[in-house]
Length: 455
Image 1 (cartoon, rainbow, N blue to C red):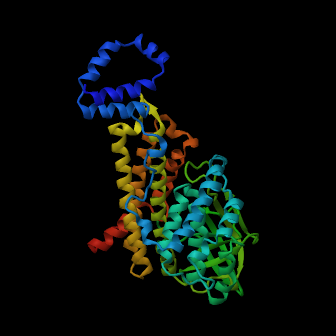
Image 2: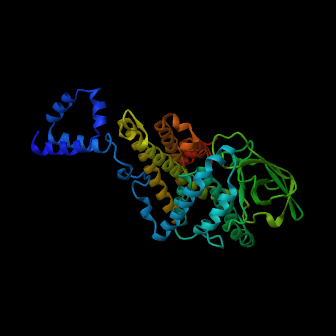
């Protein structure tokens, strides 16, 4: 050991607690320790000194990299104004939604007033729609990032927003007359009324395009609707639900604005879910439910319009998979940086790092795919197969990512307090709604092969 090294050791010795040294002497041979230290090469000695100063090899929290799911800086695609709007949404999600969401998830209830008040104040729907129902510039891209900000904290919140500002609002915009758009769009943008979307049925899910069991028939200036709908998000408290039914006269699909309290219309909350528990899904019964002709969506005369709505919103579900993965990855990374086992943070173990890297790779690939998809959507170039491929890929990768996150947290991964358990469960809904991954795979398969594998 040269004089410089001895000086460093003496410098360190001045800071040593002698009491602790005496305790150490009872368990190890200090002479052997000094002999080992004196034979160390300078670089290893320096590394040991740094480790001792930092408390066993772990950097202080201030020195650790902050968890960041945007590894390839996709947010740089946005303008300063757009990033500022997203920052406000992130603050709301972190400061207001995160502290409340576990209780809501456990109670199987949507914290609807909290969300409605917050989103109304933030004006989030007006970031993507104008008062007349037209889309703002780059609306699809910005809506995707809005979905990420919501889903990285809670997927149920993103679903609540996606049903209202996606499926229900798109139904009015694409299916409604000018008068209907003038009546409903401004109120929906202000969140003065909340909408729901009633397509899926108790016995008809993926096969909806082939024929709905819910029927409608015209009697004078009214339509009589009979049937059942299932899995209808927001319907337990929505001010109206868009109901799609098969016209008994021409067998084509028609759409109706069914207002809350309409006679013959009833909703029962679905209980016992293991995913998206903070979304209130309803089972709707329509028994001779009478709706005025003025509340029939005037531009929904066939299934094609419904397909257009689903194509537009399927991209949003793909974005939910991105946000869910970011939330799971960032939560898992932060946990591993603080959780200590065998004398150091578990982030320092090779197997843990391998899991984190795989999570980040899944997330980054999904993010890139969705950014490109939104560019295509904003340019009017997105086809069914493009939206379906994004949904298939992100949902599958999301399943992988949340499973790795749960593994990384060990036993704590199944506790709500660590948040990963919600992501783990909610991913199962992402995998199945807006078209199951199997059905979406067949949409893509038909496009690339020229053969339809649908029964």
